[in-house]
Image (cartoon, rainbow, N blue to C red; front, side):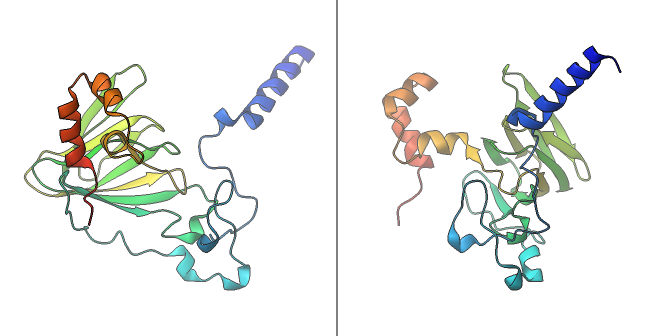
Length: 223
């Protein structure tokens, strides 16, 4: 290899191994295990590690995705996460799951993003209309059925809806131990402190009364 090619190779190698944008998922672990010690809170970029003497098989097990979840909300879907909060052994491993169950006739997982992960869904039952929107405002969408898979790229707005008359469900996989979720409607209309009504009215080209009506429907009910 001549000198110029060596220089190019070294530049590309250094860039690929040092620039954060080249990393596609959570940072690789530097030890075999780091079971999350959740009682100590989140530190820097993950949880501190539990002492090895306290690790058990339960730290790597979760049975919560086995059955459909109850759906008791206006959008018609329930997400059951299986991330580091439920499975402490996922800490530093850069992967997690979730199950999403949808009601018939319009059950919707509303438009949202995962700021820290790409998502891939596998349809367990039923049929869904799914899609994501690129930064150029292009909608990429299609219908997916039992046994099929669809990918939502990291950080892009996406949704799933069940337009059939039977329940549907998927298993979602993420390349992050804690992918995070920002639901667009909930974030804008039920944040705390609240987004100024004038901002929302101008952004959506609606009146203040309409902003208030939307907030009354989306804001969590106080007990």
